[in-house]
Image (cartoon, rainbow, N blue to C red; front, side, top):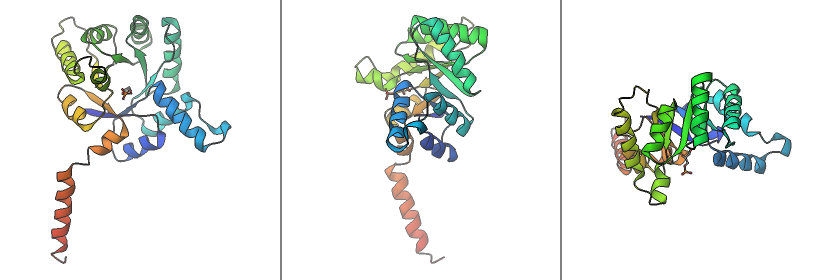
Length: 230
Ligand code: G3P
């Protein structure tokens, strides 16, 4: 399973990428808003980046897939915005919501413009099937939010989508399953069995290393090594 960083913070992305911990990035309007608000605290008004500039900075920093989400909701506007986003950098993957307009825009962008699409806000197998038929590159089931709203198990949704794609005889090329809304390492561990990618907030990625047996084992090895006086 590949690991993407679910953040718009360029410094954090560079840090994770420099350590070879990530193979891509996902952003959304909320994460962009947070990054812009952070920049407003430390920069002069004229130095705060437009969100398109942040997308370019992330792409140039990692040269790996970066999902950038449209803010339009109508199909024609989504297509125009998706085209514009894809022109920012070759690594941009256009993120569209699982709505009728989003599915239609996905079809137009993938079939006629050869632009990669990540269908987001997926909460059912049915939405994942429609995204597959529309030619999406990625489908993003939201694991944590399924759990939040007692809408069923988020991990089971990922498993059910994998099962549907494996059993699909229609000839569609199935999207990669990108498990999103990952809130903790346990989510990560569970989706690893079914997903192609898990996109995680940086904290979850750092938490992977906070296993008490790794930490205590290392401490013991270091202490024992010191006893050799080497
Ligand atoms: O990138 C979308 C998704 O990962 C959002 O997660 O924690 O806001 O539900 P969350």
